[in-house]
Length: 531
Image 1 (cartoon, rainbow, N blue to C red):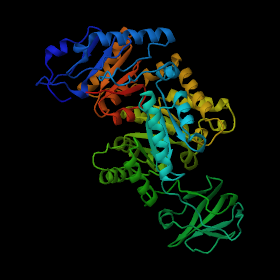
Image 2 (image 1 turned 30 degrees about the horizontal axis):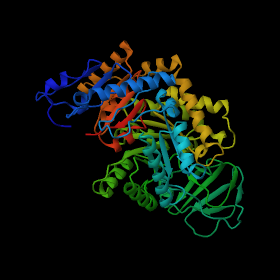
Image 3 (image 1 turned 90 degrees about the horizontal axis):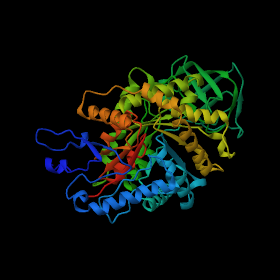
Image 4 (image 1 turned 120 degrees about the vertical axis):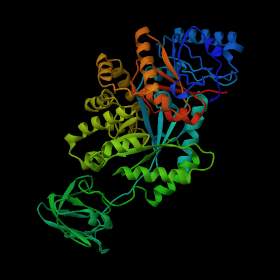
């Protein structure tokens, strides 16, 4: 697509299409600045010779008429748009009546697969209920099980000719205490002293092994340690080369292998354990679209995984996008957050560990801060953890949970995620459908559009942003149906998504991998085009 374009060919584009073209001095079409605003409920996706526009006008006209009839028959909105393949023999990327709701939403849905959702039938149901991205959690199960799930996802993708994104989530380091002589653990009283040390002997009411010398090294007097997701709170009152003496501020029971959080300390450890390195190499081999990195403390952690991906990526493979999971307070020190967002391809607001290490009242503010920074830099952001937690056991969520999901959407998140609700709950399909119902309800609210417009980031001084902002304004003024954007690796599409237009963004990509990666972004409906 870097070939020269004859201006006569450009002028032959149909009158139903307004093309905003940025041409350089050599009259070459810049793929980074190619935005097409569609005036009719159809997509003309032939922008490279030989063109079906000039060779097969009757066929395309018939396709458009059939599509228009389908829209009228199903009473779908103007957002029900099809991306026509350049290869007539290929199935068009269309929204059949079963998934018509997908084309009415802009916020995407990330769905975790697990024991409750590991069959082909259930994965297909979740897709039809609204899933745009499936998350494979490498904390549980074998690598071979994840490959089986990936194959099932690709079969659903093939059946519906719709790009589906796959996110591989690395486990990250797990910091835990050792074991106790009493198998039931020990109850720590408020105010008592308790020692964490490197002694391998089993623990008692006065001490237990902490097999992480990096925690002892990084901790200072006054630092807080949280055990078992904050159920027990310890404050360091003294330290030595191999131990920490602590005071119990929040009493509770500690048992074998309970987790330890260090909100006040930045640990000198890699976010990638040997297991993570093995899982990452496996992900690169099977072709996941996104890789999520846990236990991110500083920008150097992102640089480490990017270097490892470059070193381990098989020849001829498509490089996955990297998502940083923000779950440590150190991510907000100085300019760490802006540097993290700049280095990676996307961000996950991991509210589980973030809610343990930060005061609960701070988490909503931190969520908004992260989303605002991602919107400013044009990077997709996912809000995760306990969104519809009660639907693990109940067919309906609590009102507070529905409000929580709605808040994330009003904040401007690109996607919202389900974890145990879809992976291990009793109602995986219902939870996905409920998530989509909340999305549709919020996005139909006038307040939502006002918030998106008020919080729109300022465009950069580039031709690409100038054209995208112009296309957004034109679409709004003339009530256009969509903005079609050609993109090789997705950068132009992400710029368009950043400004939250009032119409869908149709991403026309020559690579299926790019189309899949873009399925996570707000308002984007990707499709692969053929040469």
